[in-house]
Length: 374
Image (tube, rainbow, N blue to C red; front, side, top):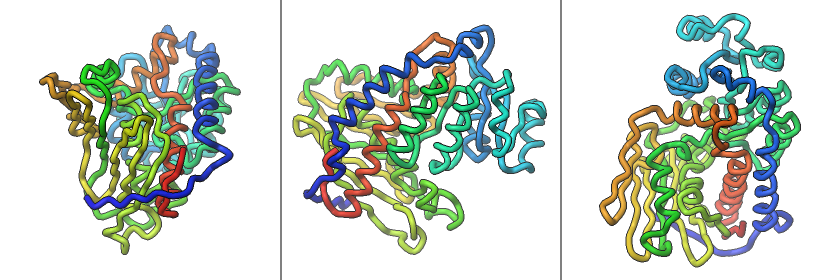
């Protein structure tokens, strides 16, 4: 790939990296204190889940995964498409009283069957429906990316904290067993210090219809929001480090199709001690890997973020085999255990907000051609 990177001015002087990390860390510490009594009561049964938005991810992955989870189960749906309701009720046995429209979603507050609401709508709508869910007194699972802006992320965190409900963001890779095993090994640094990193996530294609939300900037479409959080979060998660600067560039090969959103974005994350992560994301080019070169060895995961087959190895011959189960089921069971008070919240709202801070900086860098300090 031909990557061009620039150096130059900074931005967001009123929201520098130190202030951001301090603010986010404070929120992380506070989140554990805001657990609803509902979580304790739910310990006697499976956590009841309502899916908001019945598109492909809910229909093809989340709902089927909820048939194999141990600690949570599908109990309700929220949709703006009445024609979808009969098929969902027939397949999953959802009673009429647990079916809602977007306009009646707030009435879930009166439904004891439902403990948590999983927000699976376009990114630009995450804030709206997270607020409705939290104000209904239900725990909130928000699909990635968390929101469009840091400001929206903070509002989601605040409303969940105000209503004393748990909030978690749907970063399934932080639940995926092989990914977690590699992260833990990297943390021990058996190969010495980090030298360089490559992190990429993209899929091939030629775009979608212009009216599809993934092709609309205002809705959160494009490569960086849709897929870019995978390499971004991967670089942060595997190393446990926070980037201090970013330089980004959009690559256009289908400009006649992608008129509003980015189709491919390359970005360099800079960390302390001269460590750099060369990252890429795309919705027209296929690449999916993580590689970390260290002083005396390396780690490689390929693929890094696909729905199955994620596996890796290290230079000493150690293998990180593919997980045989459902990543989505693993994620939701872990999040349910957190609600039941039997495990930690693995991906907090503060974690999701950190990524959106960098995503916003990536667009700033790409538009100005300049390096942005975080």
